[in-house]
Amino acid sequence: MIVKGIKGLLKISCVSMGLLFCLIGTEVLAADESVGNVVGFNYKVDYPDNQLGMNKGYFDLLMVPGKEQTVTIALSNPGKENITVNVSLNGTKTNPNGVVEYGVTEIENDPSLKFPFEEVVSGPESVELAGGEVKNLELKVKMPETSFDGEILGGIQMKKANQETGEVTKGATVRNEYTYVVAMVLKNNEAPVLPEVQLNKATGSQRNYRNSVAINLSNVAATLVTGKLDVEAQIMKKGSQEVLYERKQSGMSIAPNSYMDLYVSMNGEQMIPGDYSAKVLATIEDQKWEKTLDFTITKEEADKYNKRDVGLVQDRGLDWKIVGLIVGGILVIVIILFVSVRLIQKKGSKKSGVKSSKRSSSKKR
Image (cartoon, rainbow, N blue to C red; front, side, top):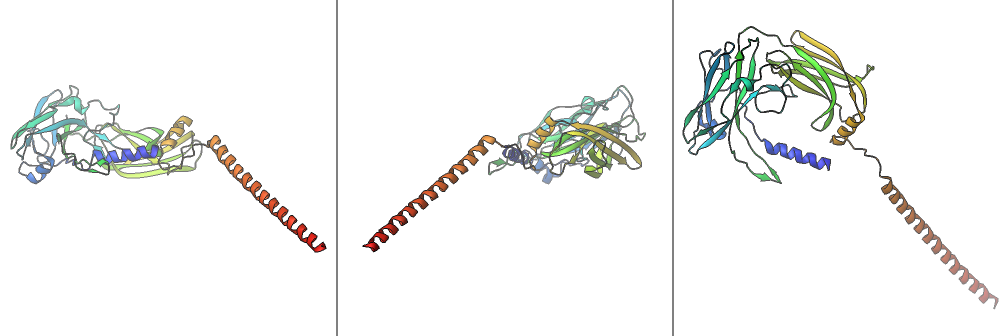
């Protein structure tokens, strides 16, 4: 049942997203109809005077504390039909692969985040565009009253509503969704800020229905790290030096004031209850952070994850009633066969005895 359920989930994952365009840092002009016809609309970033560097394809705004400002993105509909463009504003997060997410995600905010992007930037949830119409998406930015170093980073996600569903193949619906995401960086100053990694905790967990140890770490500084985060993790029994599982991952990114869960695979093995230690080393260029994280896996946790692990040959315990019935059935069959053979042998010996006695009596005569 579990395997069937997981297969269903995998189908649903294919169903939910066939192709996703996250065109961060890319400007699509209204004249580019080849792209617009696929996505359903085009956009153009209108850079304000306080933009740090033009033609970046995203907003990079220098603003004083408490300032309010409205910026715009020009949306154009190259088609003839009316369309609706749905808009969502998202603070950046970091996924378990070390990739910064600018779109909608279920990843929670890190406790170090003081100014969530969604509380600083506001805008409409959707924009209606008639056929051939060009209209501005207006975004209001209100900087925090408190000054800060570093940056507030987020993404403006734009997606055409009611996109076509596509074909149904072998019970699975494959849907292609096309989305634009424009990044926005907000600063009070241009002073550089160094990243600061915090190694938080280790826990027994799962990744893609495989037993793992999750290493939770955070970038508690308001600065984006791009392709420079390296992490090494070794898992061992507490008090032991024998490495049970390990992972080395380099070239990862991490968003400002965000956490990420790095998963160390248990290589298809069962999760065993007990006390463990995770030795973790995080490196960003010449900066290093190292810590041993102790954690406990309870029997309840181990049982739960082992039942869900699709790679395990599950030992769910023997049903002794069924075993008894099977063994009893085999014994009955063996006994029946044994008795039947004995009876046949006895009948055969009696017949041969009668024949031999008849022969002997006939000889006497």
